[in-house]
Length: 122
Image (cartoon, rainbow, N blue to C red; front, side, top):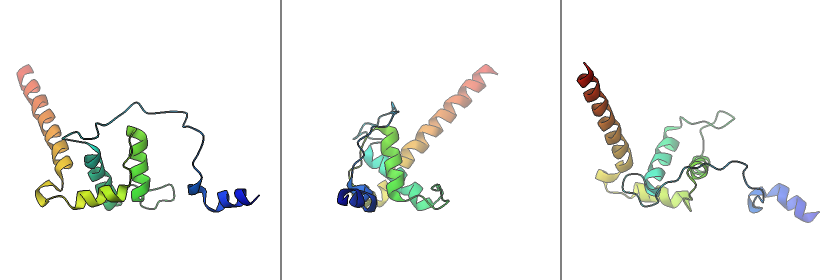
């Protein structure tokens, strides 16, 4: 009975034994140049700071909630998201948005390629 009371009071101390029925088939390369774990942390921290993603009660999602969502979708672990957040903040100013800049470059190249193909068809 005491154990049950503790489980109700401190649910985070009792790991879930059931596995999720669905596992995503998406993975990141942990130390990828463009979008590794620190790159994903940059995205998570940026989304967190924007306060644009809400929880089911309409409140801005916490850093932990966002980190867990990304970990679940991409099958990896940040370890401690606050350590990763500190790594993002401790980057040199020119590298602060390194992953966002990488993604921007990918979009710009795709847009340019699409425009070239459209011009060739005319």
